[in-house]
Amino acid sequence: MGTLEGRVAIVTGAGRGLGRAHALLLAREGARVVVNDLGGSLDGSVDGDQDPAQQVVEEILAAGGTAVADHEDVSSFEGAGRLVARAAETFGGLHVVVNNAGILRDAFLHRMTEAEWDAVIAVHLKGHFALVRQAVAYWQPLAKAGTPVNASVINTTSASGTYLALPGQANYGAAKAAIASFSIVAAAELGRLGVRVNAISPGARTRMTESTPGPIGELMRAPVAPGALDEFSPENVSPLVAYLAAESTTVTGRVFAVRGGEIQEISPWALSPERVLRSDVDWTPQQVAEGFEAVLGVDDLGTPATA
Ligand code: NAD
Image (cartoon, rainbow, N blue to C red; front, side):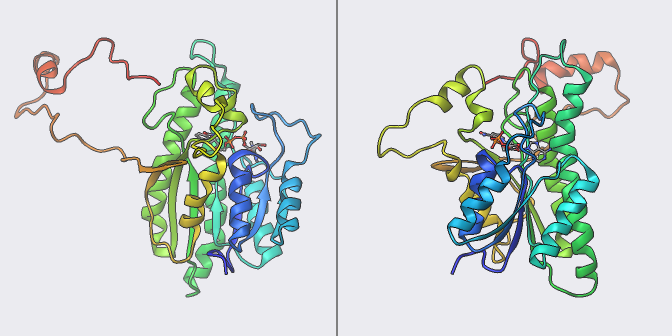
């Protein structure tokens, strides 16, 4: 018997890449899966010719699993509501939400358009909020009526924006850092309903990372020696998702970097007790300047390290 027998899961952006790997593994572990994907290109524009969600459903069915395709846009609040309703109406419940859908619209800030900012924030940050909000609207009345909920939300953050400042990704990094914070706050709030919330920061070879210029793209495109651990296979990320999704798992409010061979916790924002400038009187700019370098330290341009 699989570890997710009896669970109903939604995986967004599950037509390709990481979402596809998550959906296939969750189904193999016995979950009934709603495979959501609108079939967009990397920048989020919709070509409409392909139906990757249906292709993944067919793979799941061929392997003896249970799944249904869904084509809602996760950045639509109403669409997220219909997605939750589809899970509940098709499979009679909802226990696992994997927020994974994502796009990229990289640009340096002096060129980034309002549309590039809005689209990335909409799919990632609003998309995460919309589906969690709609799922909570489903779970909250159950919890209130005394029905045990035992649900799990797995959100998708990134190295970009959390522990890596990648130039050209101010929109994406900001959305991803906000998703990590959203996950921690949501976990603190939703525990009383029986809902756990965690986030993963994956590292995997997908169209998103293979097309990245520079060392990240090169790393992803590098051949894997026969018999060696495939560090960047998307299938090496999904087992953590399946673990976090399980009814017996109690982990909540945590953020994990994950790739083949390594799962590492990402520490949340924290005060630095060893870097505190104190005063018994009102601050003046001069007083801040005098104490700053000695206690808080300064670097050249205040520029954080990049990859
Ligand atoms: P991908 O482009 O292969 O897959 C993303 C999928 O999301 C696509 O199939 C796309 O059609 C779908 N999608 C996009 N917008 C959508 C929307 N509005 N509604 C529904 N579906 C939508 O990319 P991936 O690498 O598999 O990325 C998956 C997630 O992991 C993303 O959130 C990404 O930011 C994150 N991530 C990936 C990596 C990595 O190493 N690949 C690293 C950090 C974070």
